Image 1 (tube, rainbow, N blue to C red):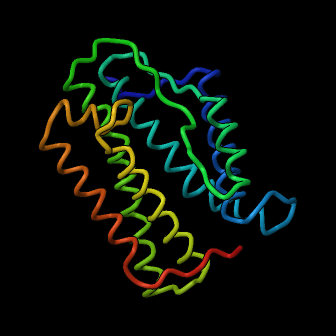
Image 2: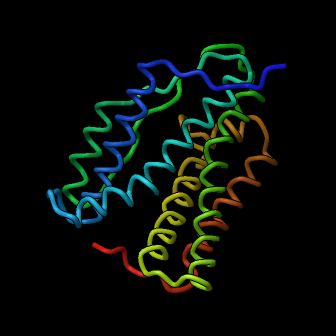
Length: 209
């Protein structure tokens, strides 16, 4: 039996890269106070790519993974207009980010839809836990200001992504998970809120920009 492998089209890879780059740039602009060809801005962009960008990207890829596991066709498509909106809004000090989504075709009932939807926020919960663990380990054994600040920011942004996506509103993952299973919904929203609380504990060093 061959191991399962995710399938990507060339168009999809282009959309994934475009969404990752633009959302990373938007958050870099937001956090550094503007766009500039300086070392400060490139550091901000790199940190955003490793925290916000990875959080969005893996969230969508886990939707895709489980959809394809169920035998469905699933491909990510960037929302170019929403990426433009996020990029422009970043210059004004706030962002509404909806970089894209995974479009699924196939036999998907309520249970499968709920599991596919749950995979995204669960990924952000796991990422938040990893960043929190990194922050604790770095604080105890390798007190690097840069590593501590990146870990703290990564934990915060992924916890926020989990909580936001678990809101029970139409179009968000939470509504599909709730329709499938109340127990699964409660477990995920509680875990998301726990991650959010844990990110607020302790002193958080400022990012280097």
